[in-house]
Amino acid sequence: MQQTASDRPILRSKVFLYITEFFSGMAVMAAELGASRLLAPYFSSSQIVWTIIIGTIMIALALGNMWGGRKADKDPNPDKLYLRIMIAAVWIALIPLVGKYLIIAISGLLIVTVSTNFLIVAAFVSCMIIFVPPLFLLGTVTPGLVKFTTDSLKDNATIVGRLGACNTVGSILGTFLPTFVTIPAVGTFVTFLIFSGLLLALPIIYFAAAKVKRIASAVSIVIFVISGILSPLTGFAFWEGNLTYEGESIYNYLQVKTLADRTILSTNVLFGVQSVTMKQGGLTGLYYDTALAAPALADHADSALILGMGTGTYARQLREYYPKMSIQGVEIDQSITNLAGRYFDEPSDIPVSTYDGRAWLEGTSKKFDVIMVDAYQDITIPFQMSSTEFFTAVRQHLNPGGVMVVNMNMISDGEGSINQALQATISSVFNVGTNFESVVMADVGGTTNRELFAKAPSSERRTSSNKVIEDNTMQRSAQTSALQQRTEELTGDAELTEYMGQVASHLVTVDRGNAGDASLVLTDDKAPVEVLGMRAIDELIAQQSGPYKEVLRTQGISGLMKMQ
Image 1 (cartoon, one colour):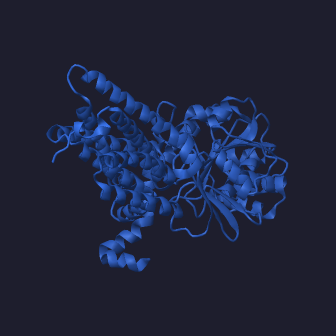
Image 2 (cartoon, one colour; image 1 turned 45 degrees about the horizontal axis):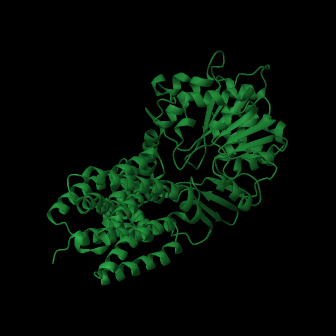
Image 3 (cartoon, helix red, strand yellow; image 1 turned 90 degrees about the vertical axis):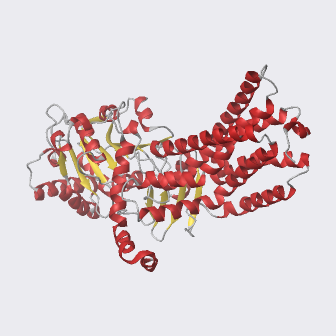
């Protein structure tokens, strides 16, 4: 027999209907924010990924609204509405248990089949499979509730307004609570469970009051409990068995791994290392070593500012090789700073400000001999730290003859590449007046990193450091000798001096003409770094996945399995 709202005593006062709208709106926004945190460790938290999340969820809600309205008109049965809510709640509860496995499976399939826009396609497919079904079901809630709540045309606008208000207030809480409370406190997985549990309570209470769907309610509760028990047992990097720490902050997924010779921090699970500390000291073999050329290229090596302190890798390297330098760090994520002291032996006498790097620059008048810009977030650089306005601020905070070193995380060359844009932008700021050859760069061997050095005009007569970075006509051997000599003078360290010879042999001068068209210069108004970054990632993935694609083409799935 078909049921109506009037047949269910719990719905007669309509309060329960408003409560349903409130928690449905909360669940939608909590799922959306949870989606960003679930995808970020694998695909980054860039604006592009956010656009995919918002777009797919809005599509799901729109289709749910249309289908739900038509369904409510043809079959105004509240039991079916609350059954859909139950299915959506159980689905969301299962996301922390199976979502990460689906993402890896989707990524593994697409990485050998998709030639371009891998991250975009993978993020989109992941959203469609994981989040669209439950959000489609929740999209049916509002039109169904309108049908059950409205008695006549006399007050239908008032009723719809109340439902909209309940949905909006719920959405507000569903936005703020995950970001500022649950995700930092208990993580993404438990956040999914909390909000799915609140949503699941609605149909459980409804069916319990009506004394129907007892088996469905019991099964839903069992599934929720199983997911609640098993989900926290494995993290985002579920294949890792020796993690020292795994957690989340407001900004990042955080992973600490202790190896035989080093401890490393990663803020995602598929791309790269964010920070490292060597247990016995010395060079790291990463881009931090190349960046140690900055003090030798500067007129003086007395002070350094690190924008993007991380766990203090560059600070430790400067302290080891340039012990007299005063160092100031800026790191936006307090949780990373806490890990630095706990796992990475960050020197306690180096001050670290918990602040956005650019905002910190705008609020100080201090100047430095070296400024390290290492502000990559996930696999992209924040647009506000890639513009002419930002690099102008950096230059203004350099002492005469001071050097900025920028870590460009991905080697990507060619017309319209992200590195071409960054080089053009930096050159437009530093290659001015008589300072025409003040920007050089060096690729870091064995990595995807490139370090770019830009020198502020010097107020002194030329020193050996000036000659290294300014004299474009110098022979390579003489250039190498000059950097080695300067490093020897400042540090007296034989290993670093020898390594600086390798760095100097890779230095390439960058001027505005070589950097590319002036239209590539990035500004606060126009800085498409995420789109450019995605192109660079496509190039890297294409290089790494090439052999696997060839095996798939010639030997099929069985060939791929044999490669494991």
